[in-house]
Image (tube, rainbow, N blue to C red; front, side):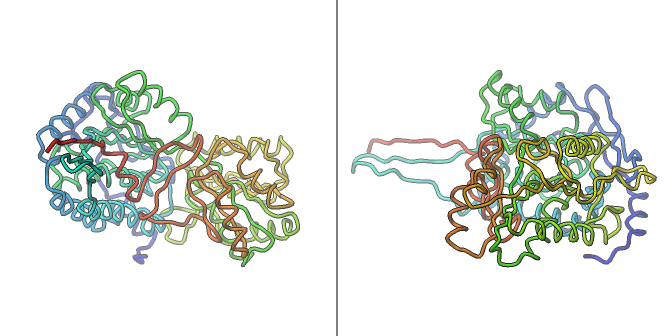
Length: 498
């Protein structure tokens, strides 16, 4: 933590001149049609800036520039070691501009400034740096052939990548895509969410300063049904990568089929089970983690531990521990206060959605243990208390549907088999956690859970060295690790007769 006070952050916020234009071929410019939309801060509802509202014409222009830049070879045919140097410099500049980027992130989507500084900025820089460091250490293959033949298996950049990223971790999710996409030599058109476009717009200029050639990274702010749809249907986009809701992910697959069969890699929703067995090694630590798993980032996390499965013999006592942890450590406050742990939900639509699900919990017979109220309305912002429901059945709406807010459902189970059955009884398969001191039970659970990430005696583990993505309707993509590079390259077999 930098030691900067809330008052200083607020002063900086008032003084900062926010850039709201699109970034195409190395230059900021207005949308072709001149349209804009208001960027509202969830902290207090005020208008931060007018943002370019891009559409079909902007998509056509950005893709054309990305294609021309790719075909020129100025980046795509640059030696891997040279691309690495640029990306490392890019990561260094992200860190140097860390306070500025963190402030933009907090103003734009409401996350606590302490989290933006400690999680989002370092994670974004790490994603770019790690991808850059890896690119000159990845080797292609030689096939096993007869003595008079040579079979080569090589990876080539796909070409033009359209990346549509979410509003909950705007900078971090963008860099998870940009790292491997740029490292492998592609040109990228980045479409940030209309709810949180500010860091993506600023990032484009930082990348240019780092030495990324003009046209390699283009940023098109705007709405999903306009510029997002235009990119998904574009006949000259080779690969589409997306993080967001399952509903939109399904539609993007349709658009890909209706256009040029572009490769589509999707990281979608989740309803992750956090399973606490009676033999957990530390129930207090498990309760603290369960509270953080739903309250961190206001619950606006695709891997949020929104279903807490607790063995019946300890359930009542454990729920009390979780409720106490939520009350003690996870209460809403002004995101610009460094002591705040729960900020504002991203906009009025999201808080309305969360409050409707809280009402649905009541209607379906769940028992409210704590929270459940909108607070700090006098600020003009969008704040809701972390909410804990007990007595939840897996057929209730709050247990089946992704809320994307701080609403925790507690379900009980009698034994191992019932726990796994409940955990897997979902359309999603993004993440899961298991708490037990029994090593065999932990391994059995990890194998049985249908999820892309399984954490044992912790919640939300992993780093850039491990892949991130889901099973089932949580999507088909993988961010992070060397496995992500597969999504941005084409395999080519070259067979030579000697």
